Image 1 (cartoon, rainbow, N blue to C red):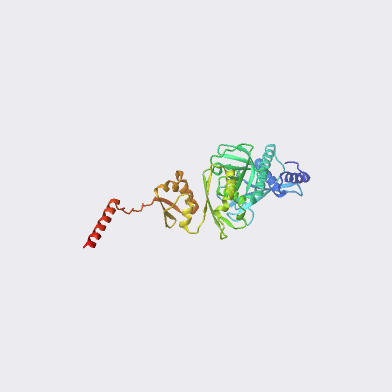
Image 2 (spheres, rainbow, N blue to C red):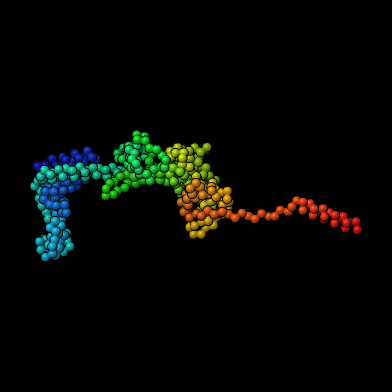
Length: 374
């Protein structure tokens, strides 16, 4: 940093800004952070709150050391605190005051520190700028190339950045091959103290909804709507749909002629995952019956957000589904806690014995004959 004149400093800011496609203000902030870190390395300690200001017109820099004003006579840490009597006039206890120090130059170690700070901060700023470009793409599906497959994370190259797809967002049983191209749903941007990254998904319900939107143009013109989706990726999805136009079959619209529309979605997610398309209803009982299809329901009793579902014995396993999957997804779809119970079999009327009926008929006939003879 030592010996940099105005032209060199200005050129550095502009060149880096152009190379990294970053605003000059961002690059200037990074260099000022580096100056503060280098000064602290040479003249202070890690506890100091130091900021630097670079004057691009003169090529000179100043650092400002912030300290908290405390009462006189108390033990204090000179790196972060200053007695009231030593602070600038008018400073009150608890105020934050700054001491200005001109930067004259740095030693070798401090210069190396500054260089590391610049590299690290620029990398972070560049990554943040790229991620901000994807803010408008959150909620859409893009195509990327699988870069690396770790134990629980698939890293996908989207061109300007690399996104991550954790196991919780993957389709169960789906095999990912490095170098292959794949469609992913941009779920959001995850920012934490350790890292910032683009969160991708193939296992979320929104991925299914987006795929259907590409196949069913009637959604865009408002003829049909998706009212709910419950999904266990790689196993089964239930999607509730409705029509806003009388006479239009919503289920048939989503299935398509000869199932072409739903098959296009299944081709993307894999044939292992089954898709149930059911008709949404504002009548809770009807909606629950639809959601539990293909099971045939005898009766539904609703109490609050709980519902008892009565089925015959031959429909019980269908209603529950393998490992409880059907009733579990139906519960997610409808928002009701569903309890499957066996319906009581109706009492059968006692049939008269055929022989008894014939005998009774003969007796009646004989009685009528005797009365006629008399």
